[in-house]
Length: 144
Image (cartoon, rainbow, N blue to C red; front, top):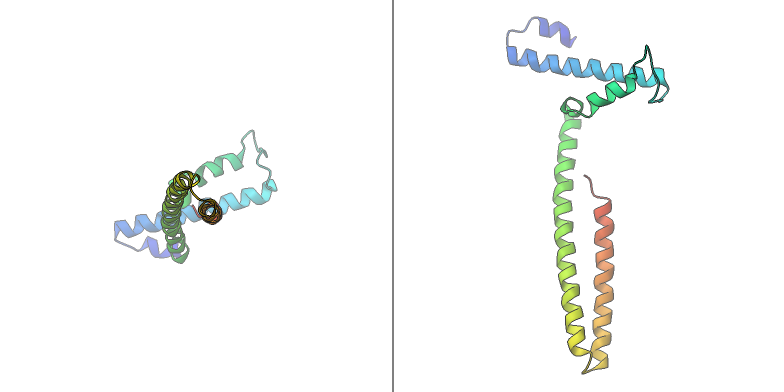
């Protein structure tokens, strides 16, 4: 039905945009058909050509990342949120590393004077090490 309405449009930009979406849908429909016909075998050939390789190249281009509607907005926001979270976690890691280095330096200075102070520094160092592990784990599960 989209093709029917495009035939009667006068606006060239709308026509080009809709045509691009139709072309994208056709290519992805062909890609899905090839996946089904090849039974997910990436090395499947037909007439000496590996169609899975050809279509997967299209998926890696900008054309393959063209999303429309809510799914595109959600994907864009998720990527933006992931970048912000990754930057925040990286800053936390740097601050915790600096704090750990400061604690180690203070512990070295206090090690000669009092044993109780060294134990307090050890407790703090363990807490910082635990926080670093939590932040590193969060970084591993951050998108993108």
